[in-house]
Length: 259
Image (spheres, rainbow, N blue to C red):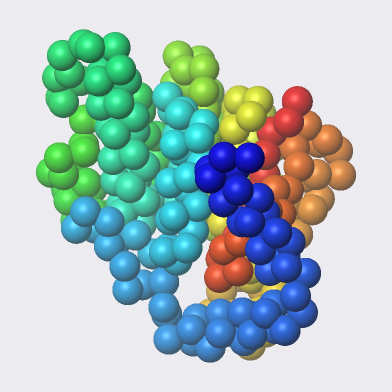
């Protein structure tokens, strides 16, 4: 066994322990609940724009994008645009690596891959900041409800031009809304890629943490994922991701398309 294989074996053994250790799970849950009361996820930027994600999930998404090498990433929910810019920058890196491997000269202004974001309300100052960013040429934005039929049709029309698609759902976190998003966009996920439902962690948090939100335990992305998977065996929850991250907003939310 070579050193790389040895390290992979060691990591696999560690993952088995992390995924089953009750004390670690309880400590992680307690930390997440406490950190959320202080809006921990608000503290991070990607290339100058607030991303409103946990760093651990950002690392996981980087791993998935590098592994899948998608040519289109679809994301519902834009907010300040950090997540769009994160994904666009990863796609730019993939294009650069393709150019190096092929020996082609790369024009950084040419977008071989695309980041498509959908939001019901793209605020003027956020749109301006995104459009002024160096990654803007790789980003397309659609304003409207992600579950409106005309918006779904626009997204599907864009998707027809791409073969490797990764989907992220991060808008309205109610059960009905996320279930409708899964029904609309999960089928666009290419085999071997992922549909990631963010903020499934809401199901595991105290109800009093959501006094001003329409979602909470029993009504959130995780309950929508569970409902969707009842009739969609082509997707499986990749538990290995949450087991290694421990701190994540998406437990049971990393859905791998296996068929």
